[in-house]
Amino acid sequence: MKKSILRSTLTATGVLFLAGCATPTTYVDPSGSRLVANVNQINIQDFANAADTMVNSLIDNLINQGKLQSGVPSEPALLAVSRITNNTSRQFDTDLLVKKIRVALLRTGRVQTTTTMNLGGPEDPLAADQQKAKEFFEDKKHTRLPDYTLSGKIIQDRTHAGDINQSAFVFQLSLSSNAGIAVWEEEKTIVKQGSAAAIGF
Amino acid sequence: MTTKLFAGIAAGTIILLQSGCSTVNTLEPAQPVAQRQMLNDKRVITDTGLYGRVRILGVNIATGPAGFMKIQVEVQNLTSGPKSFTYRIEWFDEYGMIINLPTMTAIPRSLEGKETASITAMAPTDRAKDFRIKFLDQISN
Image 1 (cartoon, rainbow over the protein chains, first blue to last red):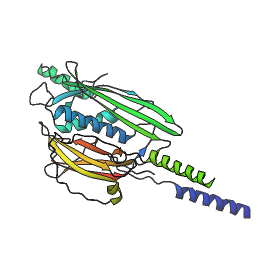
Image 2 (cartoon, each protein chain N blue to C red):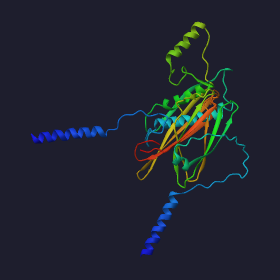
Image 3 (tube, chains in turn red, cyan):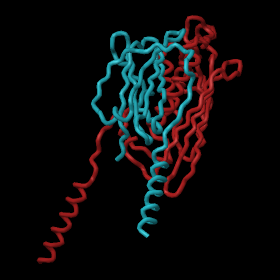
Image 4 (cartoon, chains in turn green, yellow):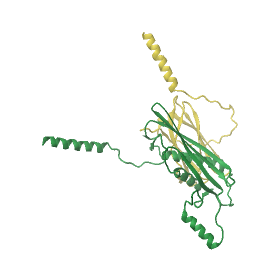
């Protein structure tokens, strides 16, 4: 009887102890410095950092210099997203990078992105169907060819010294004109070192 | 024996100090050609520890032909060892309203001992007229 009481008390204490030690779930600012950082993978702050560098470079070297050309005067230049290759050891959606760039470029007021002309079919099939229906009923072509296409690659390089692991993630992007000339190119390298995941950077 | 031990400890300390506290030497033109448009800034310092280690030397601005503002913040690590911190830039329109974008994030930066570096940023739109830069010491849990 005494043994049974002792066992129950110990179990209850253990459960309480474990519950007390568990880290409660909290919300953190996605643009802040208190996010989890891993050495061997690209974290959300890395995608945002890379996208920020790319957008800064695009604005600085192309948009702000007045070099961005639109096929239709008085309208923003039209961009189509081409192939963005993930050559890292992890699987992720490249839209984590590309969508941020698209949003930022749209907000500049100088660039718009097509959702009907993409590799492997339209991004928005309904918009593509609508465009076709409009062309059929009005008997007039509405398809505007993109002025620029965006392509790129994300590469990982890993190395270590003792217990310290290092991962370098290289983001490479090119903007090609409809003449097939790369009018803008940028590369951003993010290097991370450590032996375990940590909160904050 | 004691003298040898002291000499060994002293040599070891010097090597450790030299490896841990390497500082940066710089060279630049005595009379710079570029004309910088420096900005009168307002600073709110809540982390005196960070401000004592990483000092903001100045901010200069320029506006390109398409009307996008570009800023450059010159920072210096006042310590003799490497220093890491993060910074975040916020942009405001002509009405003082913040311009939010998914690309806006805390950006990590590290400086070697006594190193001076420039942080540059482009306004996300030509409507951006003001900015605010936040500096935060490295967080590590």
